[in-house]
Image (cartoon, rainbow, N blue to C red; front, side, top):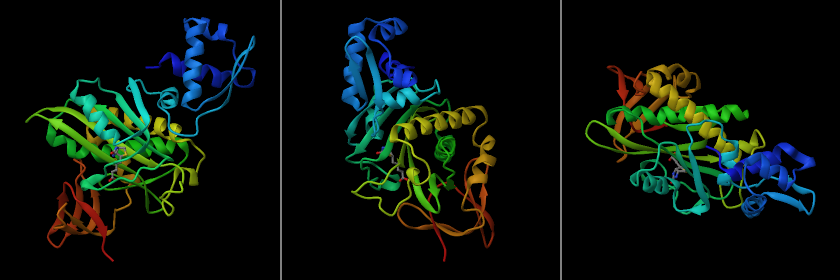
Length: 317
Ligand code: BTN
């Protein structure tokens, strides 16, 4: 759902050099010229560079360099995303999105941030979140049983891959839900949920993407901008569209319908691995054969393939 503000940003982006008068914008969007002026002031505050010439109108000079909710909303195309909110900085977009979920927010609500003070990774780890990344959390309410959610994180990883591919970046997937480029992590996914015994109440799918190098960290990581030039807002919008596509595939046919798409991007097939649980205990080891229809990793040990539901994979040297 587009807000007037993002519609004004879109109209100015489309108009380019020639710009648009306040009157034209007001008529096109069915609002007053005063309202247009207020939205333009808010867009400038958000980081859009807009020239306002008395008697002539508005001309967009440049888009915001950082991640800005209104710019994500302008660029996202899938109608699943009904509300995109956020701030320059927050503790964790997953935590913010969970608050909204508990308060009854609609499926398709998204929280984005340009940086996080307390970004959360899998297995209780920290997710360092400086400016230059895209940090987003999406609220979903899939009509399924809690037991089916183990397959949800790999499905989301595939969605992130779809999104990055649309930008011209072609990542690989490392089970369960790491998104890699050239063997290094380019994006991570943290799926959290609330459920009753037999019904999922909500799922928050959080994703952090390395977009551009910042001074603070990530110096040796891989970044979207190593491959294509894209702002964090553009990356966030593409990832949301990819997540929406994966979500629709998941709802239509479960992970089994996505398995082939996952496997073609899966980097662990044929690798000799060790899988540990979150306390460090080895749960399986052997050569990876792939994933099954429930997104479990199939690891061939001495007694044949063992399906692994969850864990941390390391390569055996
Ligand atoms: C991982 O460990 O690979 C998962 C990292 C997930 C990080 C993202 S950034 C946006 C969202 N908010 C968080 O606090 N975590 C997720």
